[in-house]
Structures are given as C-alpha cells and as structure tokens.
Amino acid sequence: MRLTFLGTGSAMPTGERNQTGLLFETAENRVLVDCGSGVLDTLAATDGGYTDLDAVLLTHHHLDHVADLLPLLKARWLADAPPLTIAGPRGTATLLDELLAVHTYLDEHVDPTVTDLDPGAHTVGGFDVRARGGRHSMPGFGYRVTPANSDGPTAVFSGDTVAFPAFLSVADGADVLVHDCSFPDDVETDNHPTPASFGEALAAADIHVETVYLTHLYPHTDGRHGEMLDSIADHYEGDVRIAEDALEVTL
Image (cartoon, rainbow, N blue to C red; front, side, top):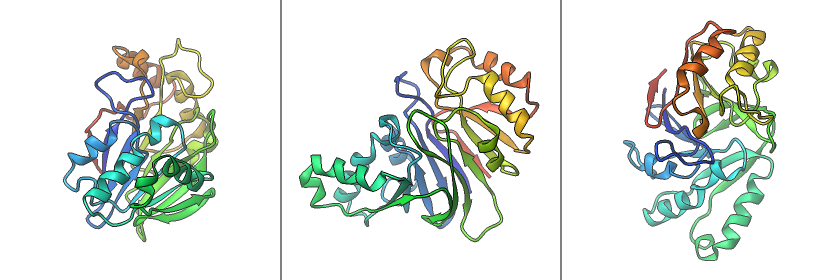
C-alpha cells in the first residue's frame, strides 16, 4: 500500500501546503481521504489522476476538508469517469445534497453513491476501514485503513481532533499514524493538539506505531518544526516526522 500526502496544511493557506488530503493506493484500488482546497490539483498530478479513484472518505465536513469535492465531481463528469463513492460521518449525504442543490446543472450530470458511516468497521473502495470518533468542534471520525481482506499494511489518520489515548489505541500495531498537530505549544487551542499534548497522549496510550507523521499544520508552525519534534520527544520516544505535500510513503 502507498500513502501520498496531497495536502498537509490547514484553513490558513501558506502557498506551500494544500488543505487536507491523503491518497491510499494498492495495485487495485485508490481511495482519497478528505478533499480540501488544492487537493484536486495534486491528485491530478498522480499516476492515476482524478479519474482512477474508487472512493472519497471524509473525516468531517469543515470547509478545509471538503472544498475540492464538487470540483472533483465536475472534473470526473467532464472526463467521463464512472460515478464515485463518497462516505463519511453522519450528515455526509445531506452535505452532498445541499452542495449539489446550489449547482443544479452539476446535479444533473453527477450521481455519486453517498453513505453515512457509523463508528466501527466498514469496507470503502477496496479498503477495510475502522471509524472512531475524535474530539473537535464538529463531529467526525479518524480512520484505520487496511487493504480489504488483508492483515496489513495499516495506516491510521486522525482527522481533526485533540490527542487522547482512547482514540490513539486504534493505531496500535499500525505502520503509520498520521495525526493532527496544528500548532506549537505556545498557541492555545481546544480543538487540535499541540506537540506536548500529543506526546503526552502517545505516552499514555502505550501503543506501538512504526512511524508518526504530523499534519494539518497552520502557518504558526513554520520554522518551528524542530522545536515541535523535540517537544513530542520529551514524552514519546518513537519515530515522529513532519509531513509534507507530495510525500509518498510505501507501507
């Protein structure tokens, strides 16, 4: 399985990071997790482009995670790609209905299969997905993702959430954990982790993960990545790295 970071930024553009988007690929299947602004362009530059895509999996419905969803649907319509599967937390079907109601001409040409997910196990686009709720200003999920009918490899993506051991336990044994770490320690936030709070939660969870990648990076983190990694290392001894747009990781 290959993981490509299509967007590692936040709702505040920097010119260097797109908003959130991750691409999971096997030889047979491709699933996009979140589709924030700029992600469609990065997806278009991948080998399969935006036409070879089995599903979109949404963590939640904030704009920086769904802004390119309608542009993706329109591009696929113009390219004569087959209808797309879209899945996410409760309200995803309503979100698509309301977005398409604004653009009635598009509603006449696209017909995605949209599914609201509950916590627990699902199969989406050729991947086994376990959804677990986070803690953010809007309800949403993080996901444990494994190729369907397989014992691995495995990646976990937190979506937007504060760091807490009950969620992190879903990442035990994973090859990769991709986790929100939006701000450095001197920024007050109750919807995202800071490095110290993330490191403390990782230590308390007492899980084994091969590599941790930090994402959803606000401009406040620019020039402070080393400091952030050091802060996490004060609590957690594992391999922690900063994600970058277009980074490819083979699991």
